Image (cartoon, rainbow, N blue to C red; front, side, top):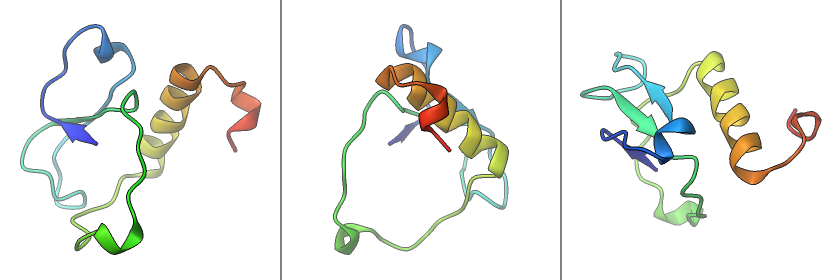
Length: 75
């Protein structure tokens, strides 16, 4: 999930994403890695945009922190 609000204490693990033509966002948003859930593939709509490799690495690092797993487990 994403939000445009970044409030404590969740702000310490949310990954900021600035708006760009590549990601399709209208304003700076934050990936809420602390709110994990699954979505059936059939429920997904049209792709709006894509994160950069650096942003995906930031999401992985935040997930390591939230889930309490060893960084070596995330490749």
